[in-house]
Amino acid sequence: MDTQRPITADEGQGTRVLIVEDHPMIAELVETRLRIEGMRPTKCLGGREAIQFLGHADVDLVILDIMMPEVDGYEVFKFMKSQERTRNVPVIFLTAKSTQDDVEKGLAMGAEYYITKPFSGADLVRKVKILLEQHRLGVAAGA
Image (cartoon, rainbow, N blue to C red; front, side):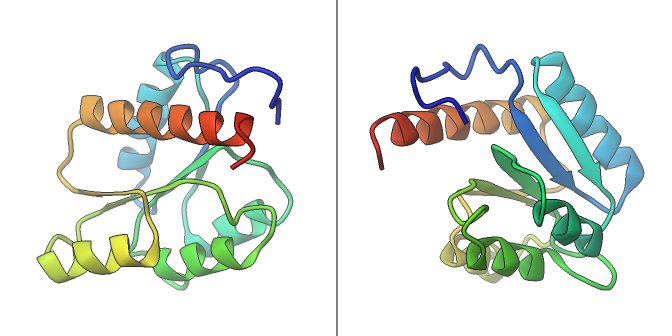
C-alpha cells in the first residue's frame, strides 16, 4: 500500500474493494457502481470464499453481507479482526438484518457503517469514499 501520499477518495483508482454477498444480482450491482467510480471490486459469493480470499489478498475495504449460508458475515468479520493483514481494513455491513439490535451489534463489533437493504447505491458509494479517505489519511499519518 502506498503511504507516501494520501490518495483522495475522488481518485479511487486501483482501490481494492471486496464485496461479500451471496445474492449475485446485489453483488453485481455493487460491483458495477464501484467500477464506475474507478475502483477495483472483487466479489465473493459467500463467507467461506471470502475468508479464503482474505487469507492471501490485500484489500482496502470490505462490503460485507451478514446472512449467508455456511459462514455468515459475523464470522468473516471476526476472522478479519483476528488477522494482522486485515485487522485494520474498514468494513461496511450491507444486510437485510435491520432491527435496532442488529444495527447496534454490527457497529459494536467494529464495523464502520451498517447499511440496510434495500439501499441507495449513491449512499453506499459516498460511504465507501468517506471510509477510504479516512483510512488513507490515518495510514499516511501513521495511525
